[in-house]
Every structure is written in structure tokens, then in C-alpha cells.
Amino acid sequence: MSNLLQGVSVYLIGMMGAGKTTVGKQLAKDLNYRFIDTDRTIEAIAKKPITEIFADQGEAYFRQLETQVLGELSVYTRSVISTGGGIITEQINWSYLRDGLVVWLDVDLEILKKRLSHDETRPLADKLESLLETRRSLYAQADIAIAINSNLSPAKISARIIKAIPSVLKSQAKIAHN
Image 1 (cartoon, rainbow, N blue to C red):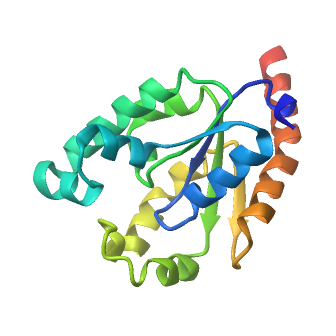
Image 2 (cartoon, rainbow, N blue to C red; image 1 turned 90 degrees about the horizontal axis):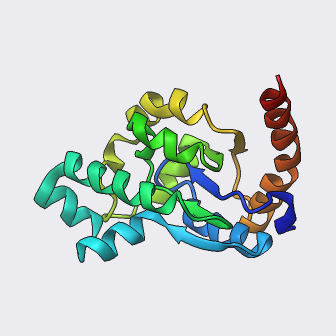
Image 3 (tube, rainbow, N blue to C red; image 1 turned 30 degrees about the vertical axis):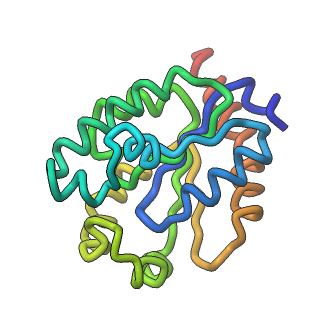
């Protein structure tokens, strides 16, 4: 299975609550890759939760830290990297994301609302609908989009991603030859 990507890392993008961490762990297991979560990495470096970073230093500081972490992680191979929901808003981050295969977990808004309704730790959760509208065109730049409009298991979502990989790699190879 891991030969499929020849060591290329996979970046999971999507809104908060999309399941990037849960699906990422499953996908890493299925591909025999390591799993890295950018938000957990940022919290370990900052020695505080993301909500505190937002409250103490603001979103701009958080985005700088996020870009720094992504830049450092982009040199890794054979990794599934779960990213924060807003990582796609900084143009420089796309240069790092493009080092790998970018997968958008496109989760239906109602499912996101339900998943986040009781989570007080998510900054910006109250702005979910407007954030999704603002970010949709950026997420759509992913190599693979997996539409999730029901509660699929992480294993089924992982299987869908793996099934889509060969067609993306073939189309990228054609572009490289032209």
C-alpha cells in the first residue's frame, strides 16, 4: 500500500470538525506512514492549547507559528499530516502543501455543526458557515476532494482516499511530461 505514493506525504485539509485527525490516523495506519497533527505540534511547541494562543497572541501569531511548523514538517516523507482548518488561507503554506498530496475532507455543513455543537475549545466555531464559504475555493485546490455527507467511518474514508490516489498520480505524471 505504501508503494502507491512512493514516499510522498499526504496532507489532510478541511474545516475544523472534518475529522482530519481521526481519518489521518487511520490513513497513516493503512499506508504504513507516520501520523503528524500540526495543531498538536503547535501546542507542544507553544506549551499551551490553541485556544490560549488565539486569546493571548491572536490569530496572526498563530498563523505564523502554523506556517513555521508546516515548513518544518514538509521535509518529511512517508507521513500523513493533519492540518488546521485555516492553514490554506496563507499563500505560502500552499508551497509546502504542494510538496505532497493534498486531500480535502469536504464535510457537509450540518455534520460539522453537529460535531462542533458541544466543543467549547474550538476558536471560530461560531463562524463556521461564513468560514466555510470563505475557504471553500481554497480547499477546492486540493489534489483529491472527498465529499462526506454522512457519518462514514474513518476506515471507509481512508479507503476512498487510497482508491483516488492512482488517478491523481497519473494525471500529475501527465502534466509533468507535457
